[in-house]
Amino acid sequence: MKYAREVRQLWDVADRYFKEAEKLRNKHSRYLDHNSCKIRDLERSYEKKIPGQLKRELNFLGAHLSSAAIRLCTISDRCPTGIIRDYKKDDLRGSQSDLAKILKKNINKYLPYMLRDNVAHIERAKPKERPLWEARQDVIEDLQIIGIFSFMKSIIDDFRNWLSEGGFLR
Image (cartoon, rainbow, N blue to C red; front, side, top):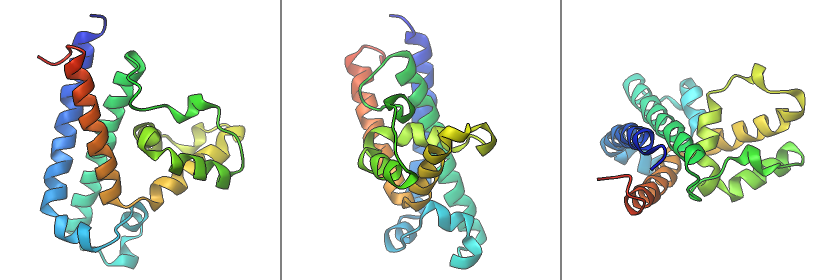
């Protein structure tokens, strides 16, 4: 099976990152369930008064989810799964506001690629790609951390099933 070793290795790493994120989510579930903590809140923690250790651990939670997403995107690039889609390949057009609406509407398919691309530097964005970059940033920054976790959990579960059915997992 082409890419079997690579896919298994990528899956093991994605699953490990997700499990680390899950530990942090469980540790801070009381806070996350009772506060609408968004990605932008971590960036502006001085306004929200998030305690330092909690902020660090929530940042790690987000980083672990992004790291898992990177691996899932690579698996999907090697072996199209139909589970997730690279929004850049969908030739999205429109204003920044229109693009943000499209990304939100398809968040369950686009999120891993959005998280992967979120680590890219703005300097890499070509002027014509700038509205899409800005729309992605707007959508991600407005997502609640618990929402990102929930979407990623569903995607991880779908990948686990797909990998099992495809014989990638032993």
